[in-house]
Length: 120
Image 1 (cartoon, helix red, strand yellow):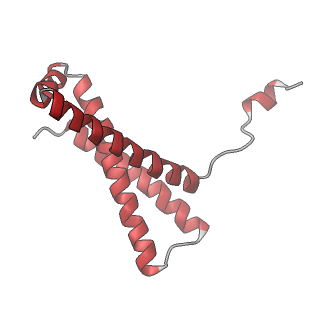
Image 2: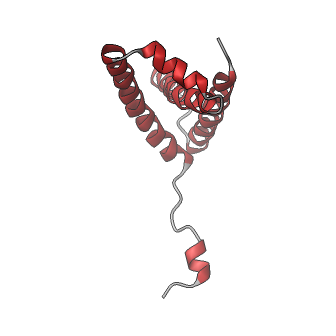
């Protein structure tokens, strides 16, 4: 039988490197689905009216913009990181990869928050 202490403890915790890899794959799928959705709305509906409807609700717009910008920023920065690794064969120690994963999450989140609140 499980005790309270056992239930509260985490038996296995994904390392940042694994989370970074999983997030890169998930953002790639999100980009594919998102682009397909935008293409579908463009072909069958009125994309401009859809965008204006999102702008009509002030609290929804930043959340929507963040959800659109995070996959783009994260996947792009992750791609640059992989290009760096492929070109130089550097930064492959566990510590360096963990640091780069944390930096990737932080930079992507920060850039996405800025993009969510910028109005063009």
